Image 1: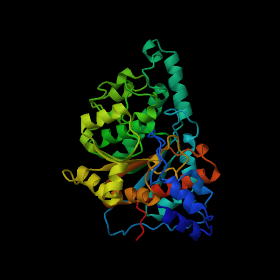
Image 2: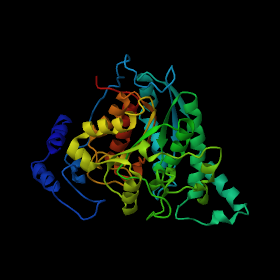
Image 3: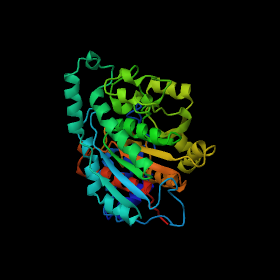
Length: 400
């Protein structure tokens, strides 16, 4: 990795200082007992920015894949992407995730999507401030004292109200044959995205690209932060009745409650897993590829196996890809709330998106946890730009 990084710095016109090689080589072998601060040969210290290993001045053309390929067969023609801003911030403790949708748009995202051959329907950002304030007001005037009890799910009333609106919107777009592209926001929005997807297309397979499993439920969560619970709340074996959580009663309303079959989920990029979540993965038999598997097998083999698991028995099923920017090593994406060293490289991160698109089955996607307030100017801009490029890759940008 260092050889590539040093080469990149020279291309950008910045020579690394003479001691950069020794310093960086040494950093590759420093260790820590904490899984959330572990350093290995896949990560380089934050000093790399001083050595000119940022993106520098880089220009990239937005070129769609060969139009003769049926890359989005689950989307109605003419293919339309519905860009949905979901600026949720209540699922975790840091302000700033609510700026993600606007920052991605400011990078020229909408024009890029039109250049990739999409008709673009830009849905205004969901007004979570008003939605959540209304939910709090209704709760305060309600005689139902259950809502005053917090079952270790922080801000569940606000998260529940916001994700309910998101679920309804995603469901409606899918039923119209459009491609919902959800811009977060923290990962608690996955509750709404998944609920809407499973109501519209219950056969959907899900690829969860993340440093974390997000498989917690209130009874076992160490933090109570709901950005760590979206998948746990979709597993019937873990929490059969979500109505016990204030704000999530809507998940049990209607003729069919949205639940995800564990066999319809694949993890990619895990490297920071809670003890209870390890047990759940084994109990439920969820197909999982950690960073160890990516190091051992290579990202190409991992993605082939992930798609084989989801599509071999059901080749026509749609896929949803949920992309947490913290899946990427903080060398490339430092501006996120729960960064963990040893993540995906810049190219691996792109390959994940590109390869899923090549399957032809991708029907919806989201990107989450971009928080520009959690890094310096260069780190923030690089994280936002990487998020922007990953979205383009998810919508069909190709090298050739």
